[in-house]
Amino acid sequence: MIRKCLFPAAGYGTRFLPATKAMPKEMLPVLTKPLIQYGVEEALTAGLDTMAIVTGRGKRSIEDHFDISYELEHQIKGTSKEHYLTEIRDVITRCTFSYTRQVEMKGLGHAILSGQTLIGNEPFAVLLADDLCDNTCEQGSVLSQMVKLYEKYQCSIVAIEEVPKEETFKYGVIAGDEIEEDIFQVTNMVEKPEPKDAPSNYAIIGRYILTPDIFDIIENTEPGRGGEIQITDALLTQAKQGKVIAYKFKGQRFDCGSVEGFVRATNYFYNK
Ligand code: G1P
Image 1: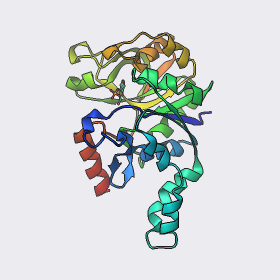
Image 2: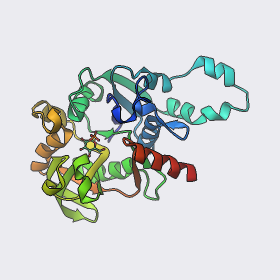
Image 3: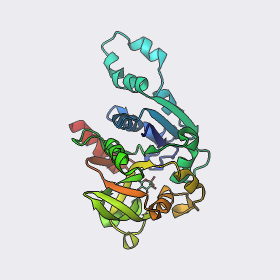
Image 4: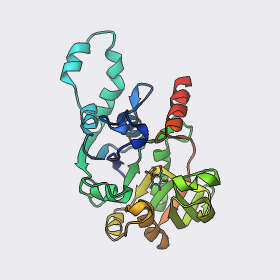
């Protein structure tokens, strides 16, 4: 059973400077809710109630967000504005949070390895909060679809989406054999390939389920693309053992790591 969700949240968010100079990119709001809260709510919909957040310098407001503000509670209690706190109060009571810091920025694989101390020896989910998903899809949230799949396959799972071939350089890209509708046995994966080198146009988006042997594998994974330790490369080791599937999820995802995707998400959620 999967209980824990890891949130790598140490990145600088340079594409959103100057907004992210003194504020974590995970706290940027789509409408009134920070990206990371959408992520935590998605994890809750999948039955995960233990949030493990890998932060870095300058990210303390994330911890404050998922804590009670007594001053605010005192100010707002019994007023007409109290309902603004309903959702975040609910999140805080339904799950627990633990934090660790990634001291050096050595890539997503390294960030996940930094979270080992919070995860231990059990399968877990990884959610990248800047990939924002609409969790109101008929089939359930993306993570809940993946957790269901884990019950059947009991191996690592990556969520994938078809992207235009010229955009493969932004993503980890897989190759695989379709074993069931929308489910692929992964045979190859490449981090951010140029379109001409991409094994397909199936891009990995920021939702993973990982088995805990991934930690030892990451430790033995050499730096790859951009000189960073890539989770894609570590997963390739598992894939070669036949232990990774890719799942073409149902639902809508926004790349809130880019200004354009962020604006699209804002309009989408506003219109909803
Ligand atoms: C990371 C991963 C990449 C994945 C992407 C999804 O890249 O390294 O494989 O496709 O997340 O958002 P990043 O966007 O952090 O550069």
